Length: 85
Image 1 (cartoon, rainbow, N blue to C red):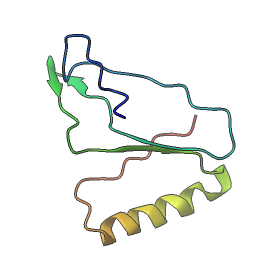
Image 2 (cartoon, helix red, strand yellow; image 1 turned 90 degrees about the vertical axis):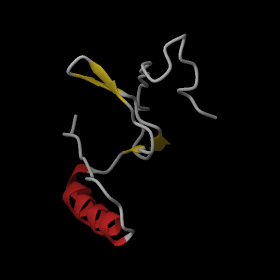
Image 3 (tube, rainbow, N blue to C red; image 1 turned 60 degrees about the vertical axis):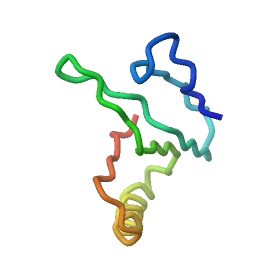
Image 4 (spheres, rainbow, N blue to C red; image 1 turned 180 degrees about the vertical axis):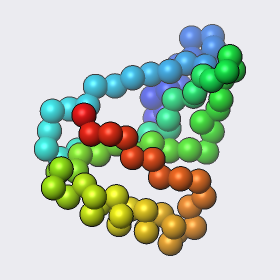
């Protein structure tokens, strides 16, 4: 199911936000929201967004491992890690 499927008459311009569960273990994989920059909508076609919890004491090790796996699989583009909240 494409949770971003409903576009309310604005395909490619509708953004959705979800609350992350207060759990110690969770994983969410989805299509990312389109971006709005310089007055234009930028498609997220072909991209994925992965959200998961990593304990703070294991974060740096996880980032290093994930970047290595992504490069080894031939992933193009960058792996973006958001700041801890």
